[in-house]
Structures are given as structure tokens and as C-alpha cells.
Image (cartoon, rainbow, N blue to C red):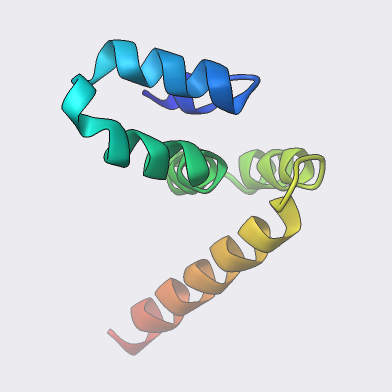
Length: 88
């Protein structure tokens, strides 16, 4: 699924999702396509365990549309998560 979300174009992504999911899921597919970069990078960021991996993702995000916004959201969520750990 992540490889599909990282497709080169929205049209390619949508076509591949249509092939994977059922036709009656078209609204879900449109939502996935609209937010595909957010979903892809949020999952990759959550899976990364080392700072160097997160830095590489940050550099990649800087090169895509809305990448800076996505990076800011990821950083905000990470800082909230760290604050929660400190309270425990």
C-alpha cells in the first residue's frame, strides 16, 4: 500500500488503488489519493528508529509539495509524544 501511495502521479496512484480495492470504495480512494503524501511520510516517520533516517525523510519532504507543512505536523506530534513519555 505504501508503494502505491508513493506513486509518481495522483492518476497512477488512483488507478493502482482501484485495482487493489473494490470499486465501491471510490470515496475512500479519493481521500487516500488526496492525503497520500501525509499518510506515506507519517508511516515512514513512525517506522524510523534512528535520527539519521528521520533526517533523510525530512530532506525528502523538503522537495515535495506541502512537504514543509507535513514535516511541521510530524515534528509537532513527535514533541507531544515525547512530552507524554516524560510525564510517565
